Image (cartoon, rainbow, N blue to C red; front, side, top):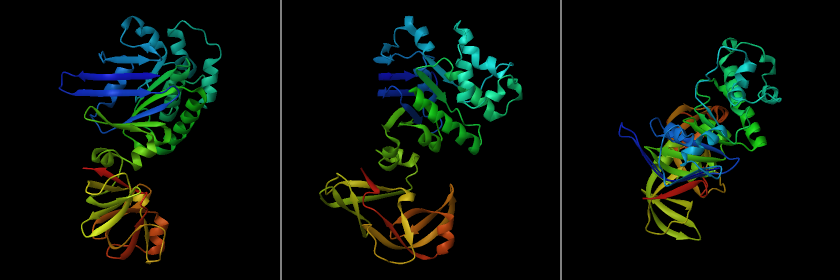
Length: 352
């Protein structure tokens, strides 16, 4: 659906967006994540033809987006949804029908279809001024999809919603985009939001694409320390590969040796990464199938999302995530001795 190559875009503020290559497939939900000021919305505006950029190649739906004579047709094939739902002072029906009116098209049942799809048929004749925040977002999404666009661009679309409403809308949106094979480009800082929707993730920072790939790959196999930091890899240990055979590496970290499945070679200086949820904890030293098994002392216990985050001193600092039930059942608290384990496949090495 989208091909972009050799983009060098600069703003008067000095900010630069440099994208060597970007490809988004038809029917794909592509999420762009990154911190504030990374360039996410600037990139989205370029894809929406709202910013005049001159990459070496830029195609949307197989047509050149560099030929401005065809920009109107390209814009008609897409919808752009801003972070705040902008509705006119009219009924829900007329708000959803607005893009059809702008195009000079009659409603041939599309509005009724969207009312059903987004579960707001009961709001058809209500004034937009009487809607809750969640209802306003559903109306905005209905309006974005009413023209059956090939491409939908979403800029932080759920940032103002509470968790329960957001979860329900994301679930409906995921179902609709899959059924319609609509290509969606989503910009967000919310990693849970991106994981719930995306087929492909792109991590952007300071105007550069750091990594693009399947969500599970980026979260478990970050390409750099910057990506690992952003996606929540809390255990990052400097080490050296002392031996490697059949993709199993022995990594020296201080006085400890850890086993990691990796294509690195002996002598490589590496950063060893382990996600908190990959670490299992127990009170006993009972044998298990995990290659990495260490005795340690809990140095802190802190709430973390819906779980708890344990910092464990194993001769190196290891972060583990445990449920409230596990915390209570084992009676875990700072100062307690504990055993921590993780699989060789759960760790990831980044060459330094």
